[in-house]
Image (cartoon, rainbow, N blue to C red; front, side, top):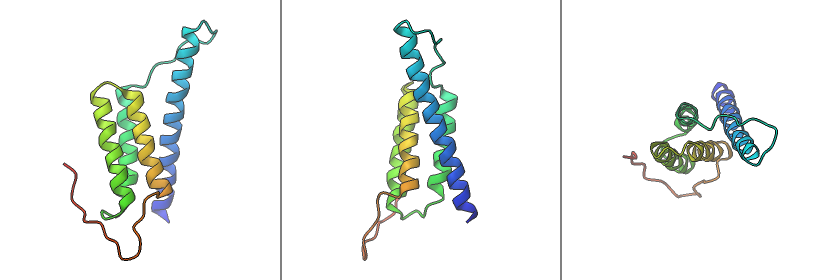
Length: 121
């Protein structure tokens, strides 16, 4: 029960971070078109790192042989790639995908199926 509360809290925090980044992008777009609103700072390396760490905490709560965990891990790898390329908005998006994957548990193995778990490099 305690881990479920933690998962919900982290998922909510990541969702709000991603929503804030989307709002930042809309504000910048409105400012560039002559809107009254002043531009808000773009997503930063710090916000990306925070989102990836929060998503990682959610992913680590799943068993290593869970298919949704593997999918979420691939999203986190891509988030780190995007951050390395300076694409922090894409990094936040990939971290959000990882969070959604864990929260909604989209990928499941059928009866009798198994996943051979190997660590990602």
